[in-house]
Image (cartoon, rainbow, N blue to C red; front, side):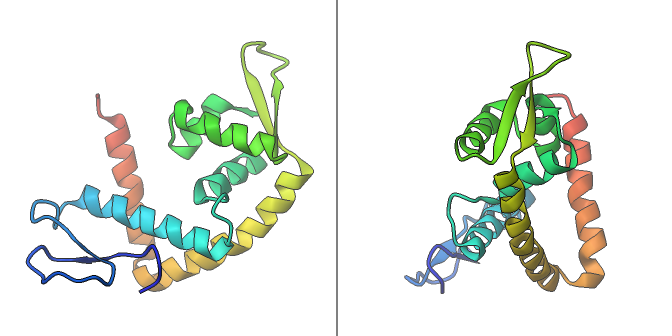
Length: 167
């Protein structure tokens, strides 16, 4: 098994040293647990594909959203990414320090900043798109092309319903 990969096995399975992770009986059928593990595993596979641990899938999402909506604010970007501003801010700071995005004061609201890609950010995004497309194709093979639309719709429904609930 590849480094940093896991294989989930039922709690009653015998122990093993080959990267298997034994899930508690309580978590074995819990959707939220498997969503989280699947997300993390997918992110690790994306980072391996890109070959640069600093270029996480979240960075690709941020760059993609900025490219499609130049001049958006950090608040708008955090909503689009599904991340709160406290976790988005360090990512933006990193992308800014690396010369991929630029943050400028808004001409209409002095309290906020607008975000745009730099030429280097656009170039990086082109490179990451190739990797993201290949990664998505791998996920298509796992989910099955015939199940893709339903699977994505289910994930969107989870976001929609849980986003609307009161905390």
